[in-house]
Image (cartoon, rainbow, N blue to C red; front, top):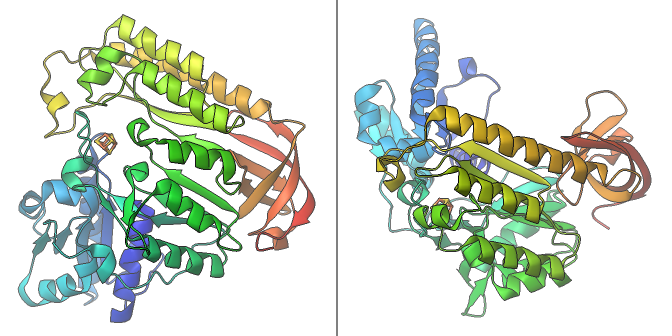
Length: 436
Ligand code: SF4
């Protein structure tokens, strides 16, 4: 989502004479677009700011000014504190205010530091100019922001605010533009994307499934994905869309976090392990080749060896094609950060190693199961060597293909010859124009 947001910030600044440069040394303005999810996010931002301050001083010696802005969730969480700790920062802006960036730049030039971390009443997306820069063969499109779930470990409801869904017509128009610019795949983004409930062109409300069906009608849009989903918002209509919308790719990121009911309750996830297993079963009935990924938090406060064993059991039962797993680390301001039964770091590390060994083994086996098969690959990046391109399988695997440069941006049929834990390799067979 931050990649998408950064592009929209570039869009909003373009009419004011700003264009992206390759290095901060050449920049009249540097925007750090921050994420609060990873450990020690704020400290990393302050240390990066130290480096940018040195660049500003070097440029000042040559008589050049540099505006420094910090955007995103760390800016939202730190607010005024950031200007107190790093007074050389000109603008601190939260994720809901970046449509006001040009006005902030002008205000900072006139009167010094600006802090904008409110949740404005006007809808950001209504104020933003149309996205202008092409994103390439695979594009992101934000359809939903914010979260009302309040998982006890997570800062998102505090930094991104309440759930908000963009109007469906706006999304369809933006998707058409992306396809006209050459995107064959669109990933719909939202902190809680399947909580999407957007105003529809007919005056009603569309859920994510209905939106996906409308997008699937766009000629040239070959692939649709969405992320990140919450198990509680996976409704029947969405499961059905997986059964009968061919453009909806057979890969789903469906975070479960833990396999223990006790820990899921402490996390305030609003579902149990059995609900998740049943959901996976329904999804696989609808789309038998569906591959899943998940997030896991190991060592959440109060996690016992039995709780952890329940997570391992769930992982073995479900079988993942990919996963992200982390040791629990407290986020300031969240309920779980105040829990007294924190798990010792050595225990978290040991459990994480056991979990990751299982997950990597599953990922390797999933990748190996594709060796010898023929699959469509969307080629979207140059390869590591001449004569090679990098693409994505329907299951979001990275695929290195021997293919001519003019296949870039196309979906080609490829035979898979080899697999590692992280990627597939093969050669292109028959060409199929993604736009056909
Ligand atoms: S549903 Fe996701 S974004 Fe919302 S609070 Fe939970 S982890 Fe955070």
